[in-house]
Length: 138
Image (cartoon, rainbow, N blue to C red; front, side):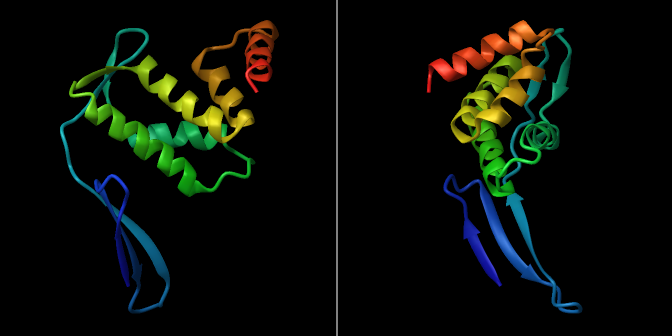
């Protein structure tokens, strides 16, 4: 039905329609590139997984007025930045900081939710400090 390139031209978005049931749906085609390896905080390595990043963002944005398209745009931006990095091994902290920077602009509640997991808040004091920083930088 319709085909569009995204801004960075790495993804083709297609609107399709089932010939049998007439239901419409969207598919995304991505250029296959080199595998990225993420170096975790504990030193373990694992392949970059868009779905894992999506899952974390969906949890942070749960019950917030954030369209899924904006979440996907964050992931697309993060992935584009990682691939432009020219390295195949990337520190997980780099990804976390990229996501937090984008979430901070998008939704403060989602940002705090993500930060509480990413920065491993262990008590109310660490949560309070992050809230104070957020309020101070309004």
